[in-house]
Image (cartoon, rainbow, N blue to C red; front, side, top):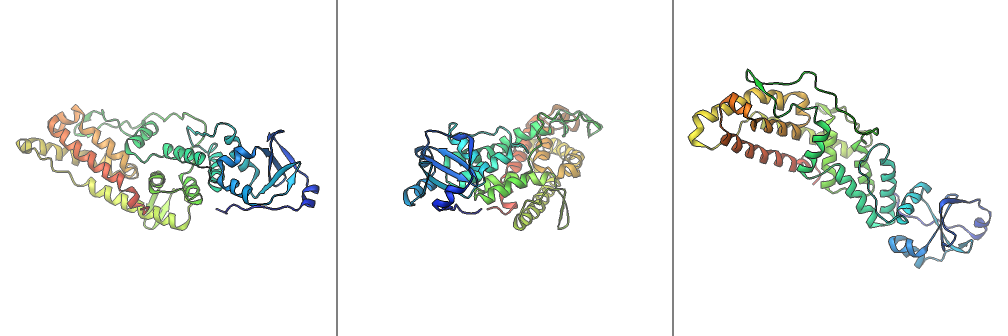
Length: 345
């Protein structure tokens, strides 16, 4: 991202240049004029200087020309970026995007660029919190989000077992869209975080995982992900991370954990192993499930908690609970290792 630059106009240039007053951010009692191209923002020096140390230092250390009786600070920004920033400054300084979509992302991007350039930390922190809320780094929050999205995509944990097979609806109901705006491409958010130097691993790894959900990997090639916004290094991270994640997932899927409950080894352990062999191929290793390992394991784990599964494969509730604890720990570890898989730490 280009650094902040002060654009200086000579007095004679200011006299002849044709300016347009911003329709809402040109205050008659303002004492500072910011210009972006031909657009003038007449604002209050005390408000702007209070929240932007960059502009405050410029005002304190630079001899500026005057325009219409006010100090005149020409900026090298797009007027819409400054309009977005000033609107927030004059509207309570707090921002919130309940959902980041294709229609709201451009405004978020403009605000994050401008708040980063002028070091308006309150706005910047709120924007990063909005991104964190949309792509949570905590597993239980991620689960809540994915549950809302994929409720009708995955087999339900209460599915009955018939003849040792999980009962899947071949024609699941279509997921109802709750809003008209499409989700924003996570690659655009990754690029924005890179441009604004706001990409610690806890912000980035959920975005890389989100990209992996729609990605089919064939050898070194990635198909299906909208990767064009990424730079080459992040494309390489995505490819490497998908390979590491899915390899770990596949290895976990073919190894039934040992449940240490000796009195029940002869009965429950055999039933658990049989259940694993029957349902793991469908719930963990099917192509659609393998692309979503975190969600696949959640669904798989839930099956072992159902009375139908326990009765169908002859293992007790106590052993099932022990197995679920082991699998939940493994799933959490898988999630926590995502930043390492995608080479973000």
